Amino acid sequence: GVTPLEILKMATINAAFALGRAGELGHLATGARADLIAFPFSGRIRNVCETIVHYEGDILASMIDGIWAIAPDAANLSTRSRHPVISR
Image (cartoon, rainbow, N blue to C red; front, side, top):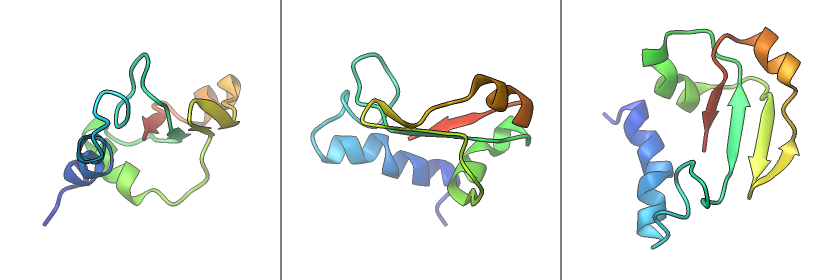
């Protein structure tokens, strides 16, 4: 089977490469176009990829093309989760 980490790479880094846009899409870096979400996570860090792939709850923040669609609330992020997970 395909692991959660492999699924995330297919949807981010590998997709950007396939579109000829590596370095611009598929990762978080200065100058890259940013789409991301933040949601609560209180599990083990080693389970982050699996959590991202299978998460079904409410999100805490969302950025689309570098603009906040749902702006983060710093107080909410720190009280709802020890480790907010951010992903493309």
